[in-house]
Amino acid sequence: MRGFDGESAYSDVQGRIAAACAAAGRERDEVTLMAVSKRQPEAAVRALAALGQRDFGENLVQAWQGRTEALADHPELRWHLIGPVQTNKAKYIARTPPAMLHTVDRSTLVEALERHLDAARPLPVLVQVNIDREPQKSGCLEENLDDLVDYVCGAQALSFEGLMCIPRFGPLAETRRAFAALRELGERVRDRVTGPRLELSMGMSADFEAAIAEGATLVRVGTALFGERE
Image (cartoon, rainbow, N blue to C red):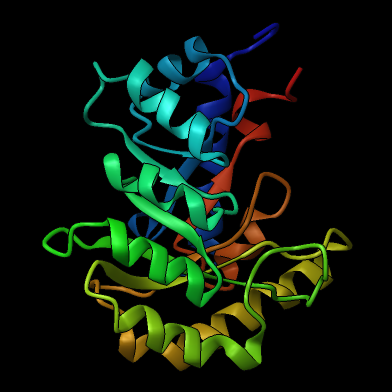
């Protein structure tokens, strides 16, 4: 936590989001800031929570469970699971479901979640798209999207809310094209969304302004809030 200045960083990121929304002709409340707390000290998470941050994201099931237990005194916090999920971890997700799971990418995961979750309390999920078709990354391919979305929508214990992507690392212009591609895919499946709006989880510390310009509703910000991980 060396050199962590939560108040300054939080104010800066909120200002960047507000400016990006204004530039895109969007309202500020159309975009949710999610603080990616992966491997960050608990004190830093608590500092951001004290400033009013409510949405946090963890990559690993075990880490997310640890956070919810360690910060049980902050029931107002919403914990998102944003990393790949192994099928055999579905039972752990069911014990204390996150606010949203961002990484549904295959039918076998849908089936596992359906077996373990309570259909009376559907879990909000996003379908992860491998937008740049990178073999090392999770996510369904564009040609499989409609079938997977249909599969999610057919699951009683899941609530389809939108899409998520992690573009290839590269020039900002290429990244923005990937964001635009996800937005277009979102329009294709918009009529199957359960919630009040189509959620698009895209954009991180270096590029979330471009993501907001292309329609992001959830931006996943770690480094700009917490600094580089030690």
